[in-house]
Amino acid sequence: MSHDNPDAPQPLSDLDMALARELAAVRARRQLLYDKLNGSLKALFSYSEWRITRHDNGMSELVVICPNMAVYKRLRNKADTIHSRFQDTVQFKHTRFILSYPPSPDAFYEHEINSRRNWSDRFFPDDDDYGF
Image (cartoon, rainbow, N blue to C red):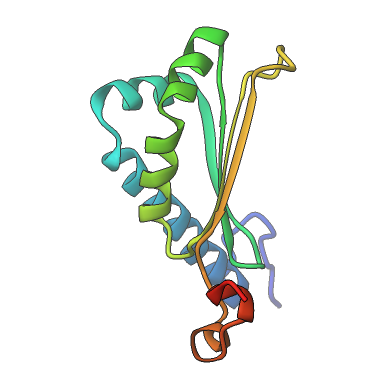
């Protein structure tokens, strides 16, 4: 007679393994971005909530939520640098960077870059590419 213990650890499924790989990849991307920041940006990021999300459409998004207006203003002044380092970190070149301080509706910044071109555009460019 078998007496299965429902509290005993169960073997990992294929889905469990896939989720573990995805989590490891997210952690690695997050650490890679953090390592590319200079000391002052690392300090500002450590005070903030931030996440990297990869969407199914191939876009990667960095969202930073600031704890106060002073941190928001300092990060906003470095937005181009942050977005550039983020874009260098992720595999996809379609990126969005969102920076906010939620209590203030004026403290919101969003910038999106899509530097990928359709492969066929390289061989069959639109007339607009030549100013026609």
